[in-house]
Amino acid sequence: MNTNIAKKLTGKVALVTGGSRSIGAAIAKRLAADGASVALTYSASPDKANEVVRSIEAAGGKALAIKADAADTEAVRLAVAKTIGTFGAIDILVNNAGTGIFAPIEQVSLEDFEKLIAINVRGLFVATQEAARHLREGGRIIHIGSTNSERMPFVGGSVYALTKGAVAGFTKGLARDLGLRGITVNNVQPGPIDTDMNPADSDFAKTLVPITALQRYGNHCHPVETSCSCWKGLIVSPMEKKTGVIDLSAVPRFPAAGCLPFSVNAPWENDFCSTDGMDPPRAVSTLCDPLRWQLQDS
Image: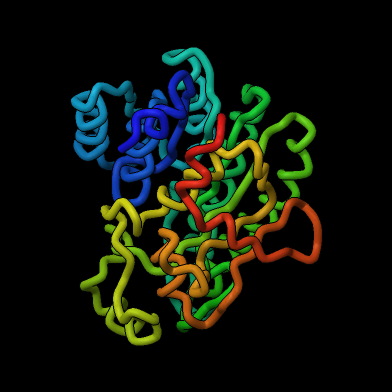
């Protein structure tokens, strides 16, 4: 990898919530490889979180694992404070922590509903609010949402979709709130990715794979197929200044540009839209060129 590209984030500090596994771990490692000091939160997987930290440190990076359940408001606030206390600042927040509970609406308990809201919405809000108090000009907030905020191809996902729709709406408003400070806010909405929460070999996956274009899940460990290959540009591309909502869940027009899981796994939609707080959204093909993103000055 070109060193000039790889070290674009030198001197930056990132916090990745839910960074001990799957997509979150891949994002944390990629940020560190690009020069950022990385704090990552975990809820119940200290061994996996420490493994991510060791991997980053072994490659010459700086990392910190923080126990913080996304449903615990005070723990989330303290995670931001600990990130700043350890590394001196916070420049990038990646809200990756989330959970999924799926059942027909008649069977969803109030406890399950509240858990989904607490982790997927309130936890994200608290982390964002606390980080926003400290982010400097040029700061970045990235939400890892879901294609299910806009399209739900299976039964039982209504409340999950509600939470991810809330994140998408929050992103649009937040982009307005923070735009004048030079802080961008974007929402990456992946399709089915092979993770601990949604493994590609599960019975559920067997029902979902047939409606994907390539008949398989995306791979979070693959450098092209993971979220970080596409959201990287949302962090290091000041010239584009994209903010609002970036929907990378459906871009079959640009499969060669490095956005595989967001294109081939969502054949029920064919748009790749970016909004900068304005309606209607406009198609932006250039966002699917990760090399262009990385070559621009930070």
